[in-house]
Length: 614
Image (tube, rainbow, N blue to C red; front, top):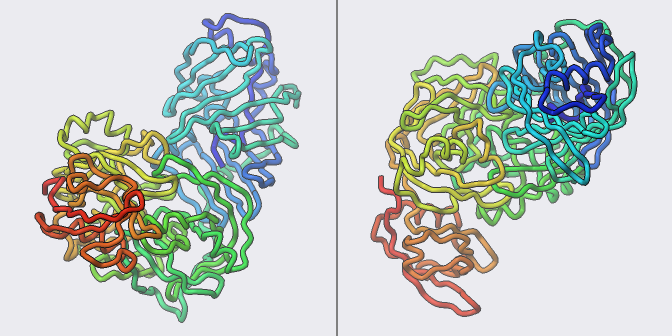
């Protein structure tokens, strides 16, 4: 759940009309009106609550060390359960199977710092947590007037308190996170133990379908707490194993559109060919869930690189198998990936990734197309590869690096087909469009929420830790919503770079190992046809045409259907193979296309050429 949502217990109460410019007076009145000196005696708090989100109802519990800002929240919601906390130094999260990780990458720590500040009542007790406090003016909404106070805790990020000018109660907090702005409304104020707090809360990103609600059932102050309650939990008993006493298992995989597909058995059925994404959640389609007899619960928000979001349900799988490896009792998202099949050109049944990689040391041999899963206790690396440490940005490994000398944090993502995608805020902050000059505007990828657009160019050097990669293709994202608007991440490194190496993902030791393979020196070539095509019932649909590119020069338009290539019916051709052909066949190659437009067929000839020189 969101850090500032269902488990929050801090609510502020104001009394009397004050001038918005005198912030110290406002905050002093907050304390006086909501209990005054009674707050000075409060050291800890435990709250129990009912929570609801996505059509599911469950329970939550929050434990706060008020004087130090330490906290831990637990929740249970349908088949999901988990926890998150902050011990004053480390922010962490724990999933339904008990697996935990420190949240050090992305904006995880910033969100935890802000939550810690609020739970420590830092605006009353600056000695507990210093902050910059500013007058953010006044707002009017539906006939109501609000004073707005902007607070930036030390080590955190800005958030706003909206204070109702009529009641002088804090009506809401507003905080901009990585990819969304979340507003948390507080109502139903009650007196407890000499102080006042809200017993109802609604947290929203603006779409009411995904609102998170909490109703406080009980509050206790000054309960005994142990330091261990706030620490990153120890690993749970193993829920994974390898058959026959083995220490590793190796399975083949297919590399399709730079995506890894492996055979997976679920609840003893299959095998099913699922995509393998290092940072991805477990996913099955509704059709596969039905085949497995699994029921889907809830409707949560799913986001990706596209600008739309989609409803995602949840279910539980008792047994997941890859080769001789098994994992028990896994939560799976239930998500309609069917439309993505038209993008990939192969049927989409689901996805596995983070939960597998978190338990095993995973080596992806891109050269021989083999995936090896090893028991962490038996893995001891003595090779000559480059070792790169990482932190977690939620599920995704994130490394310190640079692009042509510009430093930033880069997510490592086997689920991305591109080489390097630079996120929109980083590209704008560093003027990369102007820096690189000539770019190609195009659809550069596709994911949850639809197509992603960017400006494609070529960099001189990508550095990941001490590893250097020469001449990678780079797309500068132009997205306005979705994962690629995160201001805390420089870029996403995908399989276009990763496949130059055999890569070991050692999540337990938080390190990546890169060993150059036969692909290492191969040029990183860009599409030479200048168009993006997807599979459809007539063959291939043209969904994007690069201005001034070969496809446009040949007369192709968005919406055209390619029904044959070189005389071969498109229905007999593989979309990934066609894309590879457009990318790698020599400059000057003439490709004859038969297209259907407005019910009529015509022949066109595309002459391949480099749009992004090597």
